Length: 183
Image (cartoon, rainbow, N blue to C red):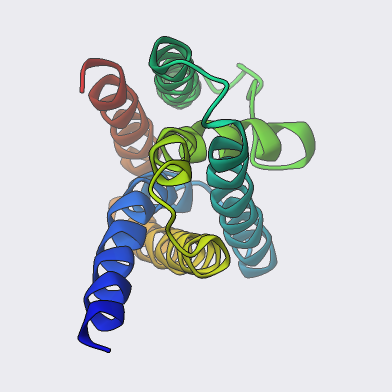
């Protein structure tokens, strides 16, 4: 029985560790003008991607080499740097149209880039024999809750920082993307 409790606690910590990227990106996104309905949708989509990406990683774990996993992490980091840079540039140039906004395809791209690290974790978990359904549900729930928390906190900070909030939000996304790229 204590083996199951230890495994559950380990998975819980892993879920929150993977969800911290959703919190960081959510903090940056929350500094944009987002309505609560949009925040709820973004959190749900991020949670779904934190279920799908490790599931794909688990299923394909035997077929994909570690080198391909590293390339996907690099691409996810580059996407976040690009989105953050675009936020920074648009803060200084108000005529610049946002390239990627958290709606439609932009939301899918953003969610993919946030959850790319969970794909690599899924590759490893696929070989460990861990309880897949429990892991996936915990990953999704933790990332959804942490992204909501980040966006709501970012929304509060935006009220305090005013025009500088988009600069701070873009900086957070760029910094997180660089962290992903360089480990």
